[in-house]
Length: 156
Image 1 (cartoon, helix red, strand yellow):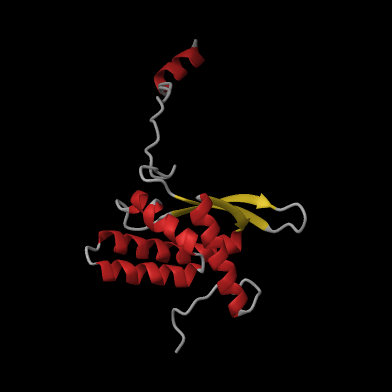
Image 2 (image 1 turned 90 degrees about the vertical axis):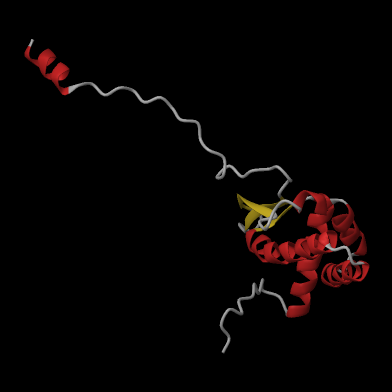
């Protein structure tokens, strides 16, 4: 049975897809925000969150062999040692208080040349809250006109 085996195909072969997602993740960890197509951003999100989880587990572990293990797993997935080093040494600190949701996707609209839907995918900052999570300020409601006042003015 092939239950729960969803895969973002992206219109390319397996090796090309893995390389593409690894390169996108390296760019994301290096720049903290990248612009790409919406389907690529959606394919990148679980990959990036998995690598960030490796970095968090390495940071929280006291055992050096465990840290090295997760570091090597991240390098194998990213295929870029500089991006992995940046993630493990600098960027991991902003995710220690979170249990997930390390990335955010903003839709931008259609690209001019081929009308592909574009999006920005970014790393969520340490104390950053999404607009959906912040409570909205309550606006004062206008008092409704009473029916008696409306009826009295109509009779007069």
